[in-house]
Length: 109
Image (tube, rainbow, N blue to C red):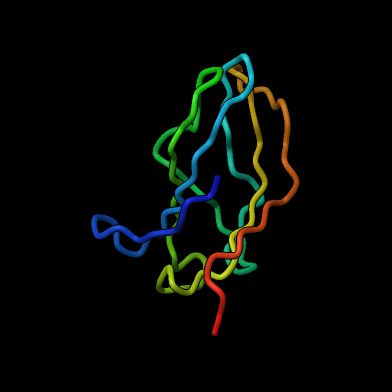
């Protein structure tokens, strides 16, 4: 579930994409963003640790990226986020890959 995109005072210049994941499987999974972009500019979403969760668990999580890599100066300039999700098992073997997900964040005036 997409929550929002924010900039935090402790790391200016970086946008944080906040999401919640829910593992509805009976095994541990790790979720990775791939093919990611911001406003049609390819940007690699990163995090400090893997989004790994046990069976039946939820995880509140955040990816971040330097806004300059997307050609923007503020989260207010983000119109569209796009990415696919790769879901891996506990051995980092791919279980599934989503279709491209598009999120409309801010609509230009």
